[in-house]
Length: 344
Image: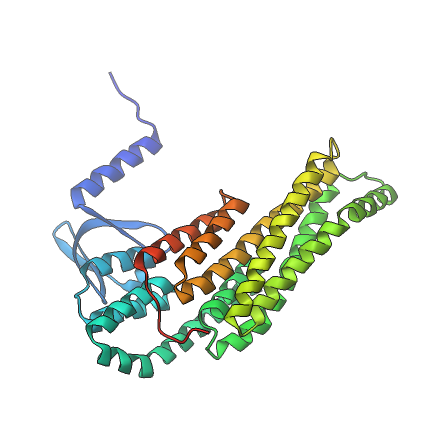
């Protein structure tokens, strides 16, 4: 008698067999993995033994989070190696992991770290900020305005003392405006499915809906302006307050929209409009709290950063962005570490 195994199950079984046979699964950048036995991990990459042959997987080929974790397990407890690991983490936007390595190196060899801080760190920060700005511009070129704003925000909340920060301040406002335009176009397109085919009737219905939602849209615009102000200010104290205030305003908008939807009955066009605005408010509210949380992380205020992460999850517990930030805050709180640079 023949047993038929579904293809997906067969692939899963094969993957388990291969992993068991080779011992380790080395995760690659952009997806994928190499099965083999890890022989060594250092600044040159991960050496993997497979079928009697040893291959070196370079840092550029490896998933940054995975590579950092593997390297950190094996890094010698000396200032130099820990600083090199910290540089890798920082260059890959793993800012809190970089802070952890820096602090550990500082305890091991204060003199070496002092020289590193004076002569190496400024160049590293400038290089990372410049690359992030290039990534933000590329995202904007491809019409991914929300992603562009998120990348630029990393510069303004983590690398605000670099020369790229001034360009990022100008860029982020433009990205925000373009994202608002994209949201409006998406709303109009979605709404068109529920409006009468007659152009005059559709216009009248759209105006009617617009008047009902106008007060909430004004609140939404005020919250958005708060975020832009927070990103453009040079004071961390002020930016933190603006982000938190924006987050609270977005939450109030969401509550108002929930109430409107509950009272809407069978008005499909109105409910579609409300649903679209709510998704925008959720996304931007989460981003506002993440910006505030990043400022707290820079200062080592982990309990406050945790509260910002909790607010993100309160807005939308299923949001991958909120979940990822919450996980990052938990990791940072466990490290209990600071970073080079002055606090303001």
